[in-house]
Length: 356
Figure 1 (cartoon, rainbow, N blue to C red):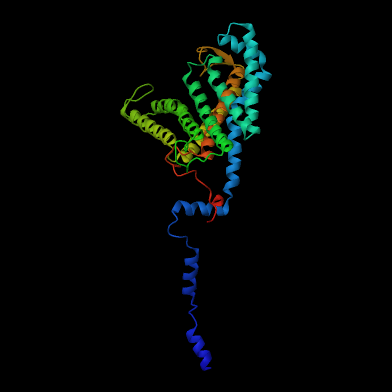
Figure 2: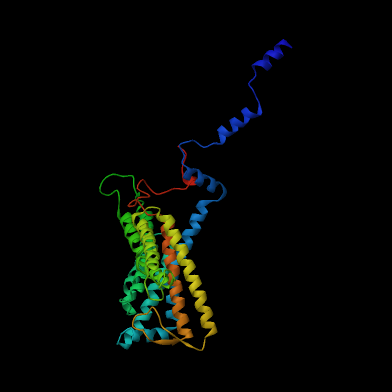
């Protein structure tokens, strides 16, 4: 009994409070881990972010080539209309009315297939083909003076450059950062930085134009009305303009660029779906009427039937989807070392980090 009591006296305390303290000490993360890192670990414990990342990359590539695939199919199934479009665009030679649509069909279909089918040299060739087509496209259709058309094409080109930088990095296996010397930041990083600049070109003009039109329609301030500026209307336009400019600046500088790109992609997608749905309803209700052709240089004041307008709206919808894909490519691949976010190297998932 004496020995037993001595053992009981010497045994460590096993009260509920002490065991709870031990559990909390073991479960609590080290104090050096930031809140963001703890949030990432908690999310990855429930969702496999690596699989989400791969699926998002596939979706982004599908979306960015959507406008090229749709345009190639339109060349194939509506070849006669495309020949007429070449004549309207100012091409006088009848041979060019046939050769240019054929060139469009070949370049866009081959480029899109290479981008989707290959992550190597074939994908790079596909990016170069589609980038060349983006440069030639406005001149072929006589839309070089259409600011919105050119800037939206530039935004898609920015997404293609971001994809190209990733493919170049995979082929050369050059690190984004970590080496000293003049070759530490190579061609992939520079291509990616140019892609970020082009990516926001559409928003710098088109989004501000939409904000201006929306702000004018707001009945703010005494005496305001359609086309009449008041102090309230000017304040709304100023706030929206500064907001859009700040978001574009964050993307160019590479500060929180993944989050900003995701926000812009969601906004473009929502706008494209809502506008397309409204136009479809209008065309179905008034299928026998004619409508003015909008957002097309050289066709001001021209009216067309519902089928032609529907064809134009479908093209603009897929162009918006390619803009969404371009933004998602920035979300997937990040801004690169020439940015504020990833100066110390690309961000990694917790599941991809190796334990030392």
